[in-house]
Image 1 (cartoon, one colour):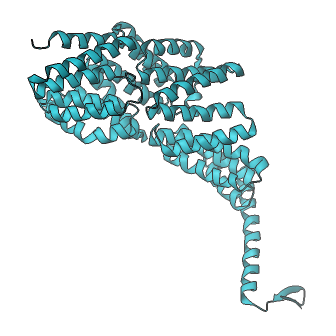
Image 2 (image 1 turned 90 degrees about the vertical axis):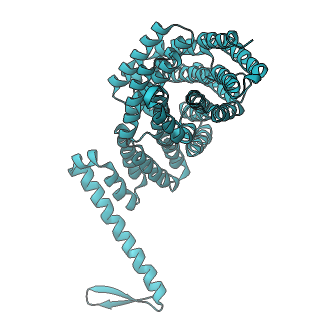
Image 3 (image 1 turned 180 degrees about the vertical axis):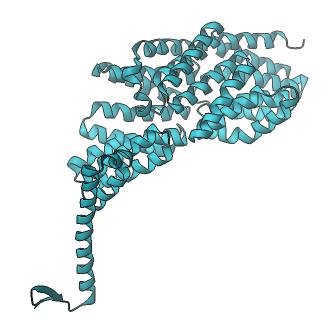
Length: 457
């Protein structure tokens, strides 16, 4: 490259075209960065309304300008705004873009940014893809590693929370119980009221999945007593996408229902839905409606199940919440599986079984519901296949929500296939009764005992 002077201008003569092109692109990059930076600064200083409403625009310009810290700030704002609108696919895109920016920053500042984006991404993925999401597990695993490296206790807690719920929903019941207990210990050591509330949220949820009625009641009592709506409503966005107190009331209602205390159950269901509506958080409302629908199903109230589940499915359609859509449609199928609508209900169950067990939070519960509907429709062999699949997925013998009913229904299917299966059916009914008694599920124990008493002589 040789400089040439022409009047007041200076130019260069290149010996090789590739050198010329590289220099030219470098010049374009420098000018491009300068202009993007000026545009971003102008938007920030002179057009505050645009900066507030379209932070992704500023994130783009500052990113192109190489001002990575500002670009990360605005990308985080854009993601948070998308979460507040319950547009989780958009939120995931913003958090992912921010993460890529943070990964190009120096480690001293970039690791902190990466941690923040990984945590936000994990929570959004849980809502958009379901709580069993492999991508969410990856996000929380990486967040836990960075949190440990930075010595950030609250962030490590949040990441380990994500790993807890993933274990919970993959039916790793012993691991989930141990992780929940670890979170309670960590929260107590920190003296952080918010973390303790979420730790109890973990304990009560784990107890629910395990079918531990007394554990649900105890954990719910702690969570409800700690919760203050003005201080804690933001936790719905930080931990798994739903409000801890909405969940506590709903699962407390389910536990009272299983205990045979229907009136207390209904009080908590009402409180769960009222709180979800008051905080105006769609995913918490969908979760609360689905859980209360489940509670009414446990009590055998088809009308109440339909009302809650139909509303939850409509909400899931409106806000793009696939896990709640499939599982709530399943409850709608159970609720309508009578009379002239029974055939349509069976078709709905057959259609949604794969979606519900893949994306919904309680695969064995949905398999049990499917079996009940199919048994009533005269398909005991198909029903038995679902029940055996549910039992095969149990991590610990005798542990799991709805397990007593699954064994009771298995006995009923065996008798429907052949009245000579009396001995095997009796064993299934006895297993149902024993598991229900250990779990504290009074209504399941009563049903199992009734099935035993009705066995043909």
